[in-house]
Image (cartoon, rainbow, N blue to C red; front, top):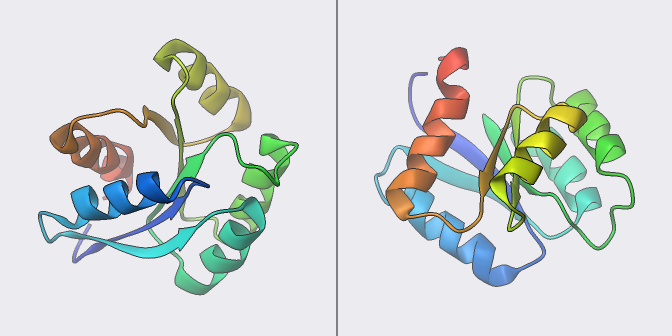
Length: 127
């Protein structure tokens, strides 16, 4: 992948969004181009920004069916990698990601270098 990696983050917790932005932009090769709090906002913003990847909280207050949200996101921006993020145990998160058709998953609680590496790993097949 040439140039800056464009990312979107959708999480209803402001602290998570701020942490992800700080960590992901630290090396200078990633930019958070969109930060949203709801599924509806994520769908709207994805169409505008076309990021390389969306880090999507699995549990959002306005989302009753995460599978439907993933479908809408794919429809809006088919080339954007969807990465589910959550505080649930990794084995459960992986199962949800596979069932919903996400491109990847990652626990929210990670060391900064692990978070950046996880994003790069998800995008590696598209490089």
